[in-house]
Length: 191
Ligand SMILES: C[S@@+](CC[C@H](N)C(=O)[O-])C[C@H]1O[C@@H](n2cnc3c(N)ncnc32)[C@H](O)[C@@H]1O
Image 1 (tube, protein in one colour):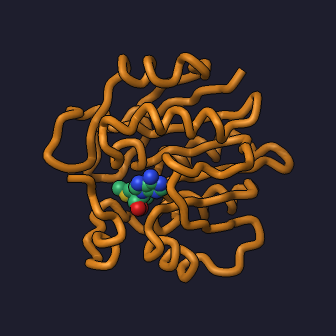
Image 2 (cartoon, protein in one colour; image 1 turned 180 degrees about the horizontal axis):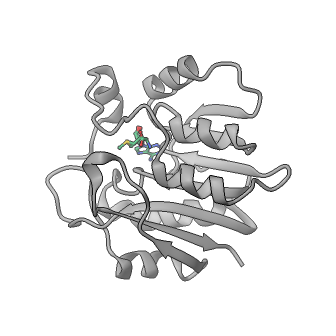
């Protein structure tokens, strides 16, 4: 049965929430200066720590989540930041109409059902500007699980994204303490 994300936030059953941006994102943004006027999208933003980090790095950041409670918590935690906009919405069914210089993926791809991954790829394609970047942290753990996180592997990632993106880099990021050896990070570019 698909996860009821709103219910999980209401029940405060959110073990994925680390109250910090992903270490791999922090390291990448330290190494890669924000382009002037650059825009970023964080789909499945949860309580907004990654989105807040990108906004602090200078991106005009849109953070999207299906759960109204997650969006409310994010707005409470990070209020009144001019270049950070939280928005309730379904990335798979209604991706934002605008296009972005950067889409950052962290724990949405592994949260959706396996049969929605092609929809994810379509929404991603619609969300990137020509020359835009897709920066992703993926979980290289088994795909078949009782419940999320559902893992992935290089073959699946390549099949899904290489039809419209060019792989620029893959590396093992610094990770949160309970995720040793599970994460792979990818930087893709839209031609
Ligand atoms: C595992 S949580 C990760 C949240 C956040 N990225 C983090 O690391 O703390 C997955 C998030 O994706 C959101 N989500 C699930 N399906 C979604 C969809 N189709 N569109 C937008 N958000 C979605 C859920 O509400 C939840 O906040």
